[in-house]
Amino acid sequence: MRRLLLGMYPSLAGLLLGLLQTGLYFQLSFTLSSSYATFLMITVCWLVGSVVGIVLAQRIRQGLNGFLLLGLLTYFACALLLQAAPFNTQLWIVYAALIVGTGIYPGVFFVRLGEYYSAGELFFKENNGFIVGLVSGTLLFMIVGRSVLWLLPVLVAALLSVCTRRFYALHTDPSIVTE
Image (cartoon, rainbow, N blue to C red; front, side):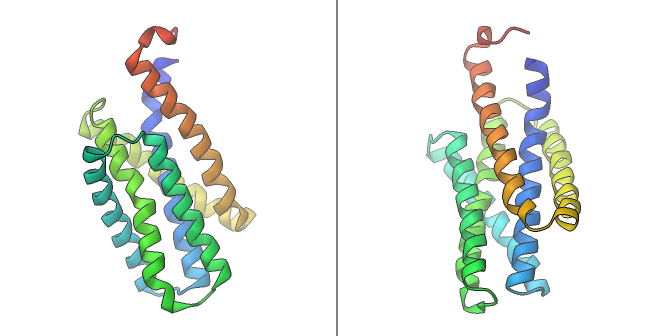
């Protein structure tokens, strides 16, 4: 059990991050603008958020699940604002700030898990999960519809939250879990 958790945990986080980026892209493209600026805003703001997360991870001892919750809340705030004010380009800066907020979690995640994995292994596992998240989010969105962009991140985040608690329990008292 321990080996499975250690092997899958970064991939599960990557899956969530891929789903969140896919959701942001589709929701912003369909209800704000489908220009290259939308994709660029998502990418740049996500990366800025990750840098902020790296800094915060070193200064704030908030648990990883707190940052996960922040990422979900800002993701859903962005989606709700898009529903309330579609095609309102005056809100670009608000969307950008919300995407930065969503991007904080990955920065914190990489700093915190860098203590337990080599950089190569962590990036490999997270990136594979991220690709699965991008592909599955896109395909499921096309097949099922917009509800996937709301439901799937919540389900994966709930599972990731449980895994986060379990992961840290294994590293503080390995006798908690029998192999």
